[in-house]
Length: 280
Image 1 (cartoon, rainbow, N blue to C red):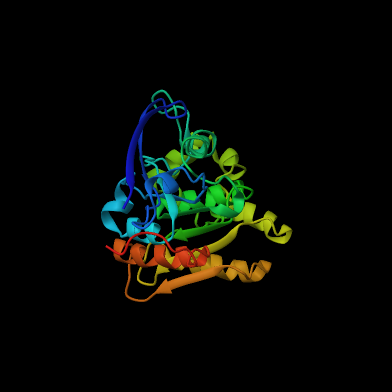
Image 2 (image 1 turned 90 degrees about the vertical axis):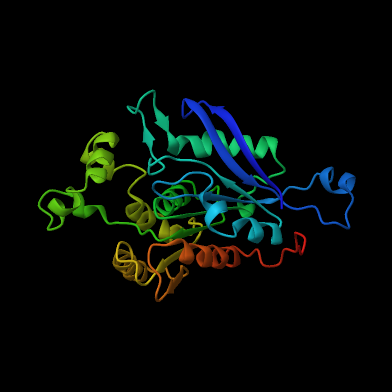
């Protein structure tokens, strides 16, 4: 296996920042000279963690390193605190997590690693909060990603945040939601921002510009599954029929499901034809 923990000072996060990067394996029958100086550019998976997590989660709690090595895939895993992958300009000196990924981390990876910057070679996935980040980046930057896998997260229709809606009080009772709305500059600004992925999907669905989308959820995940089924019905209503839905009974909001789901996502991305890594 080939894995790198890399620490650097981030302009957009205003602090030192650590990422984990999985790099393709050199096969034993290939010489180091031929492998490391081949000039080959590899496909990239941008893999996002959930609430309370960091860049190490996916490596510690799944077999992503093995799966990536088998498929000659670069995997980039940043740390995002509990930011929702959003910009928080008033947090300390400013933590611009939304801008950081596209304006700093992606140029860094493309410039310093053997990573392809072609849309068809870039994929994004994440769990829970990272799933929210995944769909947000995928629909706001559809030109950057060929496909996205949203694990245990679901777009929410923002009508429920408007005063007078039956869910208004319930939605705004969450301290996290209230803080997020305040950070965006108020409810109207939040509704008309990049956070409103439901509305953005409605706009892009007829254009054919969306990346290929996969949504995955454990059927016993009481936090997410019901919302995901509502969104699935909406996709059918607007004619967004090429979405992949991956659900499993008996699984909740848990790593055992996410380990299975990320394998399904790699297949969905079309990476099964790759032949990388060493057998032991």
